Image (tube, rainbow, N blue to C red; front, top):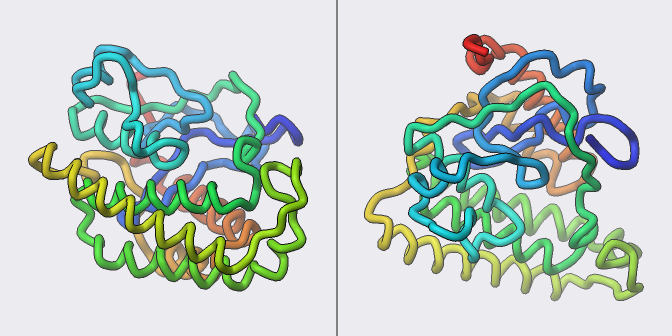
Length: 250
């Protein structure tokens, strides 16, 4: 649940082939979530894992996420690894935790932008999405254009959750995106070589791509308002096809 407004923060997360995720039911009333259903991955803000399943899926003995995926997309990778290893990820209709999104890195900050960009490109490199070339170009467009349009507003916002008054300039934004891209691709290619084969995203439940999904995301151009609209559209697409995701054996 969202700590501030008492509405749903996330009831699990769904990806598309573009590797763009959304917290389904975000902003909705908790009474809207009525059934247990499969999700692509459990949001890192609130998740419970069976230790032996994680060990089998990742090969890790003492952790659950790749260190290099810290902060963003680490939970996406784990969810895909679990599905690819024949395990399942399920969301249950119980409100069990409170979360304030963006409280760690703030709503706007170069570090947050860097970590998110790095995580996305790393994820793109280590998975078998058929749209890898498209994900690169679209995500770059999303970040550069969206943030460039937001610079006048960002310069007036406080960084680090409002604790300092340092403004964010275009150079900070471009540098964060460039370094995130370079480091994400480099790490992802190295990791893929070590893995021997990519993680199979098609073993996991995904939201089917359609113009009503792609166009709103593009038009959002990285804005918080656009993101909210996109998340609601993903939730509606999920609800429309919930028969594909509902867990009928519980």
